[in-house]
Amino acid sequence: MAIPFVDLNPQHRACRKELDAALCRVLDSGTYILGPEVEAFEAEYAAYCGAAHCVGVGSGLDAMHLALLAMDIGPGDEVIVPSLTYIATWLAVSHCGAQPVPVEPCEATCNLDPERVEAAITPRTRAIIPVHLYGLPVDLDPILAIARRHGLKVLEDAAQAHGAGYRGTRIGAHGDAVAWSFYPGKNLGALGDGGAVTTADARIAQRLYALRNYGSSTKYVHSVRGFNSRLDPLQAAVLRVKLPRLDTWNAERRDIATRYSAGLDGSGLELPSVPGWADPVWHLYVVRSEERDRLQQSLADAGIATGIHYPTPPHRQGAYAGLGLCPGSLPISEQIHAQVLSLPMYPGMTATQVDEVIAAIWNARITAA
Ligand SMILES: *Cc1c(COP(=O)(O)O)cnc(C)c1O
Image 1: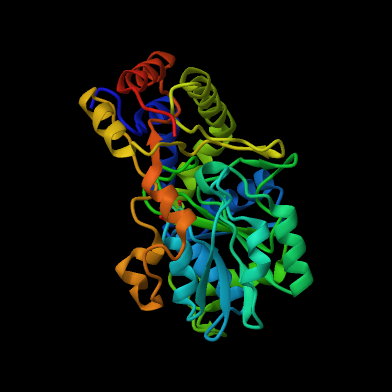
Image 2: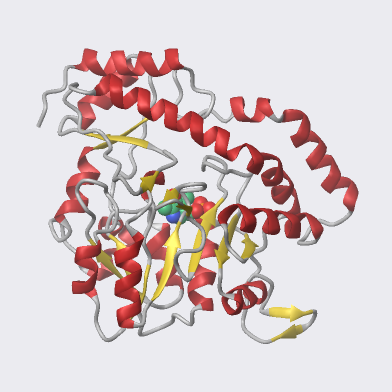
């Protein structure tokens, strides 16, 4: 493809010498599990997020799974999840033995609709997982208020929202815990799998330190049945090189999004809408059209790669066939899944490339819905 969907080379070129040095530092340190490199990243990321604690784990999925366990979520419990999200959000709930209860999104933002959350609460509900999808913060205040009223925990899935702001504060400590992924393509990405939980709650943090390490806080003393899910020092060292550049890279994403939105105005596509209280970080720039498949093909013919986030909603996956949610049961999510197309977006993408994508979209002559 002449224009890739994501290209990590520009960001790696920008800090290649520091990356090489960081990898060598870990190699020479002799410490390959936990240790000072992981602790330093945890302290730096907690400070960046404005959270008291950060616990590095093996992946974003593990971050959510272990955070739910640290909140004592288990069999018989229900957890409210968005119907429109990556399946990992649901899997984290299922892996605790609890039941994911899907709630439909706001059509404008694609994020969990606070007005629908309350109706989904039952006596078994224990937690809500708002997902800051595509890098756009969820309207947290009403969700936190509902949670407080009903005595529920809030775990934010911030896997796509590193550095995003909600009403002037960075995402990272609004809810009881916030789960992060450092999958390579995320706004802050490692060179492999990685994840973290940030929280203001010392008790949740202490439980996570044990859960990620065989349930042990003291060597060979196992207070709970834990897991092996630790952030690698190699990945921590890479993340420490990239973190100081995250705001600059997010600003590049914002410029690309602004250029897309200006250039595509009137093109027939439904463009992302940003509420006044949100400072999004554009993990993805997602447009919508009833002619999505034709548009994707037309862009592919022009050498432009695109993505679909996501082609099939969690409730229509084989993994959740047992829930018995038939086609049409979550119509807003299903319609969005059928219409979304993610345009190329990455730090280092040039204005010329963005203009090429815009021109190719106009060439496709989409008719407005
Ligand atoms: C990437 C992602 C995850 C999973 O993170 P991994 O590190 O790949 O396990 C979870 N939720 C959302 C919304 C994601 O985008």
